[in-house]
Image 1 (cartoon, rainbow, N blue to C red):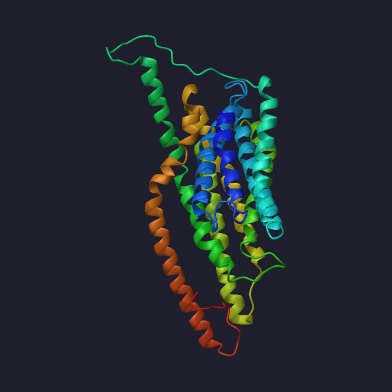
Image 2: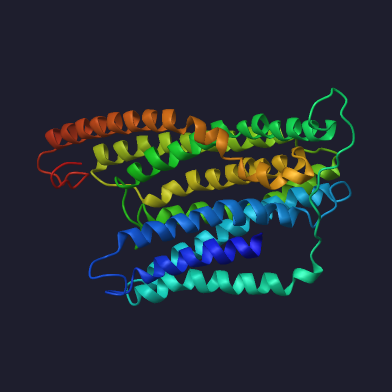
Length: 359
């Protein structure tokens, strides 16, 4: 499934996206339909085969009982390597685009092809399990066996287990979408680093915190006979996001205080603390969600369980985005009022925000 899905969805999607960068190849004007088709193939392949199938395939290389601790660490490393790819691509592609955009967008396709080739080379050494349903008896005169029904019930338990990560997802998206990005526009650049480039720190934080947690925190707790439950990891992840919000409140106070008293802006690097807490929260919460889904789901449906992890959060996203839209509009009005007050109080000074036709 990994080979077929990557070859038929992911790679064609990346190639189609890259082809849209060649002028005149897919039409006289920019072919938006080709771009949408490429993104659709890419997202479908990424969610169904790379995120779901690959994560479970890797976990099945370990013994479910004798190596349960190794499975827990595996999911942390799996999440770290996904973030590492995002980090490298987020730095490399923008640097190449100004000189050769077509080559920049063909790099991901070439990288996936190389990775698929290496994966195929190692195929004989992988642990491969067969999926089957054993029909035994009909205890209640129904059309399905007891094992069939029991496994469906066990699969249904994945939803409430992974739904515990909903508070983290809402707080994380809110912190990134409505707080950090908007707040960063009111802060001073540090060299070439501005508010948009600060997002790279999130990926760096995931990598650093992942190494420290897996190789430092977890072994230290195990030596003392302590094993963190999944609910405790969810709680630690959510608490980390709360600490990120606390940092944002402190920064917000410093922004207003610095400008009011000294007519200056504070450095955007102060947002580093928030991104560090966000990265630590992702390691605790998101990697634990994959680990919990793998352990709870029956062996025949672990891929389905892994793919279903985002579903509880997606079900609440329409309400969340409505709340986020109202919140950002209110935030924009408050910022506008604050700017007017600052300009009126200091009419001869350079305003904090430069506006062209509105905020």
